[in-house]
Structures are given as structure tokens and as C-alpha cells.
Amino acid sequence: MSRRIRLVIAYDGTSYVGWQLQDNGVSVQQRLNEAALFITGEQIQLHGSGRTDSGVHARAQVAHFDTNARMPAEKFAIALNMRLPRDIRVLHSEEVPKEFHARFFAKNKTYRYTVQTGLHADVFGRFTALHVHTPLDYDRMQRAAAYALGEHDFKAFMSADCKITNTIRTIAKSEWTQNGNYLHYEVSANGFLYNMVRILVGTLLEIGGGKLPEDAIARALTSGLRADAGATAPPHGLCLQRVQYDDFDTEEVLRRI
Amino acid sequence: MSRRIRLVIAYDGTSYVGWQLQDNGVSVQQRLNEAALFITGEQIQLHGSGRTDSGVHARAQVAHFDTNARMPAEKFAIALNMRLPRDIRVLHSEEVPKEFHARFFAKNKTYRYTVQTGLHADVFGRFTALHVHTPLDYDRMQRAAAYALGEHDFKAFMSADCKITNTIRTIAKSEWTQNGNYLHYEVSANGFLYNMVRILVGTLLEIGGGKLPEDAIARALTSGLRADAGATAPPHGLCLQRVQYDDFDTEEVLRRI
Image (cartoon, rainbow over all chains, first blue to last red; front, side):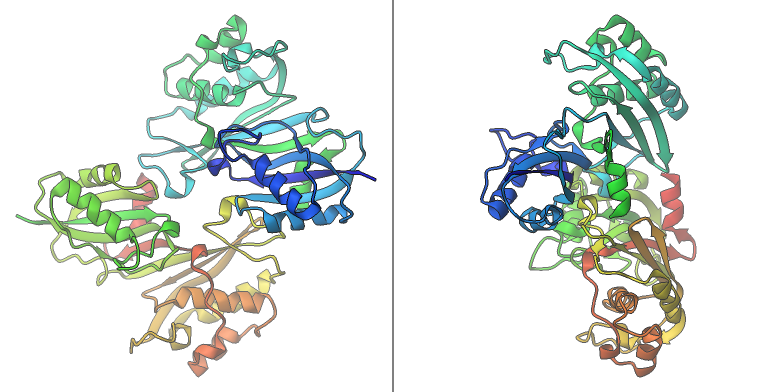
């Protein structure tokens, strides 16, 4: 009698080709598959809430898989962690109804992009923050970020080689916070196009550096042209922060553990 | 005409055998020597404010060296950084009087030890925080830490194979702060014995876990016996946070950059 198990997973993406299984290197999913094979004897099919690129991190990724193993559902987290490298941790495991799907049922996702300002790159942030040593106008970036709020066609904020047709998304949060030399951009949406957050951040940084006008996001949304948005920011500043479902929120799990 | 240059250096100690040159691996000092040789053509003698062990980090180490190179003193930071790996950064360089000595003139040093609580180790803190999944009584550790304050003979808090004779030190600060799952112990003193901070932390963690009485530090200070203190905490949670001189404070440098 197979059961469906939901996982909440954190990973440091530095050493991986990304979340998704790929031929050209080790993915987070591959490591989870290997750990699951060891403890269940099964070749599991792991479905994440979405892909993350090479070098992108997750504070709280959600995934599900089916298993016939008879281990109590809540024990999977500890059992998998014993077989996982230290840059991947399963924070939570539980049984869910067979209807649950980590990707299709996700209602909202939050990403956070971290920028470190100042003359020298912080040695402790070198894998998790983009170092920008040129001046950034924080208030300008804050005002500019608000143009992304609401429902828009984000096709200008999508990697040019992506062939998806429905490019309309709704952004519920688009906001910077500051903590000393560290600037954090948080963006929440019902879904993201390929490279959307990194292009938004790249655009905001060019606005902050004076290379693009303050309303550059609005202009690119109107034109729909990738060329009107900024460059794609590097992956290592990006982190999948939170995934929300109708009846499940990773933030509540993180609060409990 | 040789000049004396003072550096403020940050490093992630994970990949190094420690600050000091050693035969058994690469030290932070070796990397700085190599970078200095490249830009000055000289084999410099670098004097740090003190050693840090393998795996121990520095947010602000101070060191000095003499050079005949004619580069402006404040340019050394950027020039050295171009030749240094990304886990070592020179944050500041300036000329100082020939009398200055990074070690002998240091009046106060501050170390910070980071502990992460909770069931699972944080993937992002795995090189900079000690993960403790068993319960810790924070208030008890806070009260216990105060016993270390003031002038004492700290010989119970010294690695047994250290042969130093003057083991009297004065601690000006010994305090925990809490930020979610992260606990930080900060300790300031006019000097530290070998492994002193790590033994203080090991003792405090055993007090917090109920294995040692709340006044264990006072008892060990009185007996002078290493056996009355706790185990030596692992190095990776430790960071040299600040070095102060009569007329120079790394904290002011960090505030400016």
C-alpha cells in the first residue's frame, strides 16, 4: 500500500547543477534519490515545487514522492539526513493525501535575493550573496520594486530561450530590506517564469546604479521586450525562501523546528 | 626606506590549518605571504595579533609587516585581494609607526562563538556554527558566563599541553545573545590562553545541557584543574571578532567600509 510523503528540504546549492536531475553533474534531486534508495530500496520519483538553477539555494523547498516503505512518515527526515551530504537537510517529512502535488498545488512562492555592498566581498557571504562594490541607491530600488506588484505579463522577465506561452503572473510582494551592508530583495508570486527573479534583480540593480530609469520595470512590462529589462543577476544570491499551499506553509514548519 | 604596514584581514578558516605558517598544510599567513611576494617581490614577515586554530574564522584579524615597496599604503588591501583566494580578504591597509606591533600592542580581543540549536543543522551555518540538537538552558548559560568576568587565573581553561606560565587574564565581557535558533557567545579579554575560548564554550554548553553545575566556571577557576572545566568546543563555531589597540579599533574600520 503506497503512501505519499511530503518533504521540506533546505540546501546550499553551491555544489550542485540545480534541483533537477541532469546529465552534466550532481543535482540536489540525485542526492535525495540516492538517500531514498538506500533507506527504502526503492527508486523514488521526487516532485519538487519547482526547479532551482545551479548555484541557487533553498531555505525551504517542498517535494513529494510515493513509497511502499513502512517507516513512519515523520522518520523519513532523520533517516534521509543520515545518508545526505551536509549541504542538504530534510527539515520535515509527513504523509499527505495521494492527491497532493508539490508543484501543481503550490499557491505562492517566495524568493529572496541577497546583495552585499561595500568595497570588499564578505568572506562569509561569498556563496550566498552577490557582492556589488559600486554605489546603489537603495530608496530608488525600493520605489522601482513596487512596479512589479500585481498581475502582469512578465514575458520581458523571462530567459529568451524559454518557450512557455502563459507568461502572466501575479506578484504579491516585491520589497527590499536592509541590514547593514546586506540588502535583501523578497518577491512573492503565484508562480515564476524561468530566470524571472534573477532578471528582476538584475533590473533593480541597474536602476539602483543609475543605468536604468526608475520605472524601467514598468516600461519592460509594457513593451514585453527582454532587452528593456536588465541583465540576469548571478544565481548564488538567490534562495527559495518559502512555499505556500492552501493548507500547508513551510514558514510554519520552520517556526516549529 | 622600509615602512610598516598594518592590515585588517577577514577569513573563512574552513580550508586552512590556521593563521600560523605550518608544515602540514596551507595557512592563512602562507596565502598572504604569497600574495605579498607577488605584488612586492619581497618575502614579508607577517605578524598577527595572535594565532587562530585550524577551522577558526576571523571577521577582523590585525597583522603588520615591513616593506620597501613604494605602493601607497592604502592600496595594499586591493592589490593583495587581487592575488588572494576569495576566503581571505584584506579589509584595510595603512602605514603605521615602526614601533607598532600587532601582537604586543593589542589591548583587547573579542571572540564570538556561534551555536545553532534545533533538530537539524542549518545548511548555511555548517562551517560557522556548532549545531547542538539537545536542549540548552539559555538563561542558565547566561548566568554561568558571568563567572568568567574579571581577573582570574585561567589555567583550568588552557589546553593541557600548553606550557605558558602566566595564566592570569582579565575578561571584560562574557555574554550570550540569541537570534532565533542562533546563540552567540561573545568574550572580550586582554589576552587569551591556548584554546581558552573553546574550553569556556565547551564548559558553558555542558552547563546549559545540565551536565555541569551553574557555577562550574567558578569552581574550575578556583581549583585550576583542566578536568573541572568542560570539553573543548569544536573550532568552526569560533570567530575572531575584534582587536583593539590604544589608538586603533577594528570595529571602527569595519564601520567605515
